[in-house]
Every structure is written in structure tokens, then in C-alpha cells.
Image (cartoon, rainbow, N blue to C red; front, side):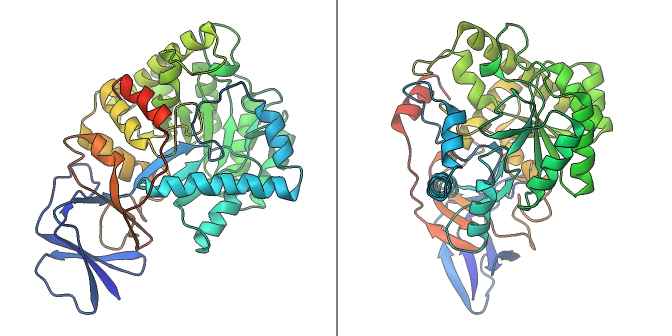
Length: 427
């Protein structure tokens, strides 16, 4: 049986989207099969009356880590030890996967129909992805790298990343990761704000150019795009020269770097959400040093400046939240859109277009999802108010459609202690 969505106002996700009334969306199976005049008869059709609400493509989050919830820890945690314990036995692995299932279900209920999981515990993400794809549990589409690759002592090594110090080790590790059929490969090329001991550049380059080159070559041979954590200019340049497809985060750009983005057909994925609380030194962010606070400010400024220059140059810029960091939940993607407008100076319409179709294209799935078009997968959300007027309309989703399956009145587990703090700073 077909499903016909009537009396809705359509925002299709395209660049110049405008609210469209008087049309109905007809779905069959997992696909959108037609967009027809509202009064046109469609045989054997279930009717869903949207009652004047807005229907738009499901949101896409290009940068998440699925194990953490985003609630700030009350004390400093040894993430390496926790991950070691979780992966040491079948019970631990079951518990680890159940955490991810909970977070990804919450993601879907918030209207985020696709995520890119860029660094996780072992192969847990692909296990959960496969359960979702087989219909055993609800969840969004997951594109995952499983464990990322980092130098010994590098960013997240021992928790969300596995060590490789030589080109040969990187190649072997990619071959091992490939056994679980990931969707991309993730490299941790520089350090990050919280593991930087000096002031000035949050992301000191830690992965050698030889390892970057070998990893990109092997990943591309196997058909996998490569995403790279980079928070310093030196690392970004090496990543682009090595063939990385997406730069995650960013840093103060140079003309040479922007030129490399264009020459290499690479994209930037900005993540303002995690750095902002640190840069503002919000209460409740535990164990953060003055150096980390000041480096967070440098990171936010550099990432935003790079995004602005890339947008001017026609380089795709996507949005991710880095969910699992303190104050970055799996349901608050809408806040990243607000940051994009506030800090990068784009319009609300462009921010919404980015969180749907642009993100889909960067992820390599723009032919499947990201817009409401005939032939695409029926991944859609419904909200009461117009997000082109106020992006906060996206925080309360009344319906979610995933693969053509309708979820009415989705329930999102929210964390008031997180949202109250974020609301207090106006985003």
C-alpha cells in the first residue's frame, strides 16, 4: 500500500527551497514515488494528514561518536580503560552495543535519519548498523568507520582509535577494519584541544605524511572514502596532499590550503558544538585547563574562518556535532545549524540545505537521500513551525519517516541539565 502525505508544507532541501503548499507526497515501500497536486486521487493509499505542518528531508549529522551521550561527566573518566574493559568479554561487548543502540534510537527520534560515525569502540558501530538495516531495532542510517586510526599516543588512541605508526601497520589495520565492511576510514592526523599541552595550535600534527599517504591509497583501493581529524594547518595540508576526502573540524586557513581543497575535491565538516562550551568555559565541563579553554577559542575561530573561505571558494562545507563530547547530545543537531548561521554568516535556508542535501552529497549518498524528490528514499521529518524562520523549530519533531516507515509522536530522551546550560548562552 502507498502512503500519501497531505496538507503539509514542503521544504524539499534544495538550495533555493521555498515552502510549497498544495502538493502531496506519495511513498511506496521505502521510496518517494511521486509528488502530486493535493487533490489528485491515488489508488490503494493510506492517508497521513499533516494538518498544515512542515515536512522536510530527515537531518544528516556528518560527525558523531555513538558510545557517549553528551552528558558531562561528574569526574574525569579513563576512557582508554573503559573501552578496554568493554571489549574484553562478550558481556562487555553486549553492554557497549546496547549503549550505542540507545543513543542511535534517540538520534532517530530527534529527526536525524542519517549519521556518520567517525571513530568508535572496535566494530560496535557496524554491528548496530547491521541490526538496524535488518529491521531488528529502530535507528538511523549509519555510515561508520568503526575504530579510527591514530599514531601511538595520538588523538583518541586506545579508545575510539587504534594505533598504527608505520605505513605497513596502517595498511594492515585498514585491511582488518575492512573485514567488518565499514563505510569509510577515519584518520586522527593531529591532536585535539584536550590532549594539547601548549598554547597556540590545538592540533599539532602527529601522523606522518608517509602513513597518511599509505592509508589513503589503501582505503581508496578498497573503495572507502577517508575522513581525517585535523585541528592544525600543517596536518590539514598533509591530509589534503595525501588524498583525504573530508577534513573534520578545521583550522586557520591559508591560500594554499583552500586551493588544495579545490584541487583534491575535498570537503570540510565543521563541528562548532563541542568547542564552543570549552571556549566559553561553561560550568560543569570537568578537568579542563586554561590552555584547553584558550585553544578552544583558537579552534573555533580557525574552523569558522576556514569554513567561510571554503564557502567563498565553492568548497563544500558540511555540518557535524561531534556528539558524545560534553554538552553535545545526539538529539541537538539543530543547534549546529544555529551556530552555522551565527558564526559563518549563512542564511537559515542555506543551513537547512546543508544539514540535508549538502551533507548527503558529502557523505556520497546524495543520490539516495537529502531531499524530497521522486525516486529518493523516504527519509523525512515533520515539524509544526517553519524552520526557515526559526531553526529551533527542528528541536521538536512530530513525525519521523525512515525508509518509508512512519513514526508518529517520536519520543526523545533529553537531558535538561545540558539544554539549560546551552539555552543560557543563547544557542
